[in-house]
Image (tube, rainbow, N blue to C red; front, side, top):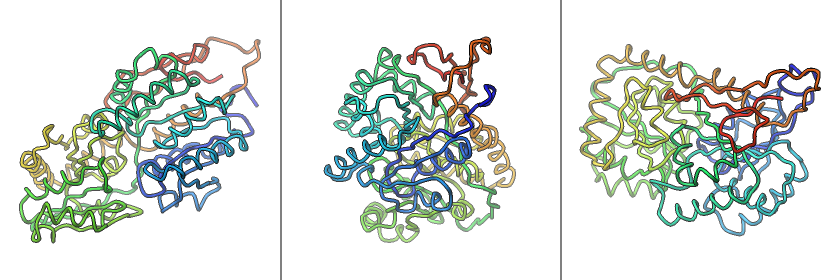
Length: 429
């Protein structure tokens, strides 16, 4: 290969570890990653049994392997079986890089690393939300933090990738700067690829709030229902996401809203694409207890919708740059949250075409896919092992720089020759 080429002529093999096979942010992020690296590396995507989230892989050359036990919350026997199967798979395929993106995949991978079973393989982890800290159940948070410290203190050097600068700082405070110094820590936000912006249609007799979630502790659907209960009667709620049409969710809504208001809720369940619902909505609501950087919120941003988001480290980069967004109250006051959402939606609808254009322009500056793909290719270059240049061709050390995050944080860079504990990406070759 020519030493000026960023990737070798023979593409290296990269194994991406996902988790649950349903529709969620991790499969969409992996879809963006695969598209950015197309033709540069050979991807193998590993996930739990596909339930639609990884359907995009059926139409391309990327291999998709399914291992039951990679989704969080399954039976212990499944996880143990997945651990042994994952070890065999990695040793058989011998990828240049194993890159984990889902919580259980990270746990299983780190168990293998602590046992010294994967020598000579580059390891990267992307945190789609920290597994500990505010918003998590207290016991699970404490156990997750203890395992995180142990794995990073005793395991081999890894590249740790965060979706926001706030998440990186929170992780360093919790785990400890001494432990983090053993590893390379980077920040690369998400992007969105919804497509053409839906045309807004004003419906003054009816307003529609869009929530994309799933049952469970994280998404806090009870808070969304309490906020909706405090809105005027001409508002409707569109509830999308796997399991949002299930009997337990309907029962929760009926209990919190009552028989009259629950008739204004559309329980839509899992949707492969959100464009049509974005076009029908007047505002987007997110009530999660914790997030990395929610792709559904970025898609609503791309669609030109106003956003009402829980005030979290994973949403602040979005709130900072969105021209028509608001943070929900820190005390989860449904009346206060409903007033904020009401002012946001009504203000948007009064000048919808102009405000939609302003929102789209802000999204284009910060979360458009083409700049993100450039940064992702640079990141792949930094993560993959490359041959050393001949001595005669050596020059000043190059530094690979990532543009600032959406909130305008400072760049971070470090030369490859330095130990992996230095924050910032290493330079190519």
